[in-house]
View 1 (tube, rainbow, N blue to C red):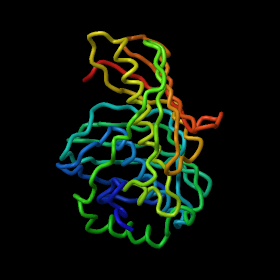
View 2 (cartoon, helix red, strand yellow; view 1 turned 90 degrees about the vertical axis):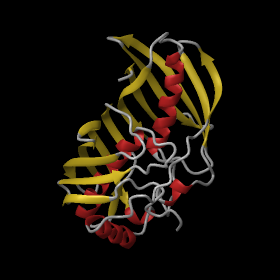
View 3 (cartoon, rainbow, N blue to C red; view 1 turned 45 degrees about the horizontal axis):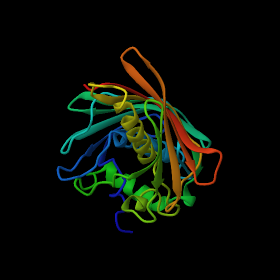
View 4 (cartoon, rainbow, N blue to C red; view 1 turned 180 degrees about the vertical axis):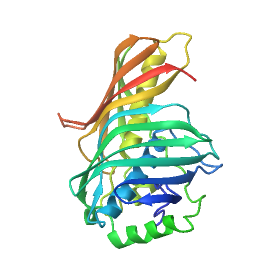
Length: 277
């Protein structure tokens, strides 16, 4: 399949590996890549944890979606950066994997994940287990070609409603076809949660820009992340950002995504913004 292990895979090589315990890896952001949001640093860390979890469970199951108590953002990635990821697995079985991890750039922490839980589902529903075993061998050996990733689209937001200083609502039209579906996932393509979070935080950033007069804000933390349902290609989502509080030089927005015609949220989180570093 075109783009396999290239379009949405953010581990080039695994340098230390204890299945179900810990792992270290790296990913090089190509110098000519386009959109590369900070959420993909969290994705790279989560994918490393997934390899360690799947290997321990014999590729019978794989982690999908999940819950994250807190993700801290310290610096944005840039083209050409070498991202070094490290994870520690707290628990891992056929039901769920629990882990923490960091992504470093130039030796400095760029993103830190705390208390992440990924429910395990049958691997064969999403991918070919033998193909995953084969690619893990590549990652544990010489590694995959570092320049294979060609970027992800910045999913456009269509404004629906805006109450200045209070709420912003937008429509997100999930592409019916996109390169990242080749990796996420070949047997059951769904919108990656990290791209959904990128869209929701961009909506919140626009809302808060109208409140923070004269200030340049950046995302510093995303907490209480809950991804409750899969979003298939071609779906329509309604995204909502609502200003919750302004305190201690930060602004906090509640984020929510709902599928068209559905009452239960697809996902949600709380985003904290502070002065740009």
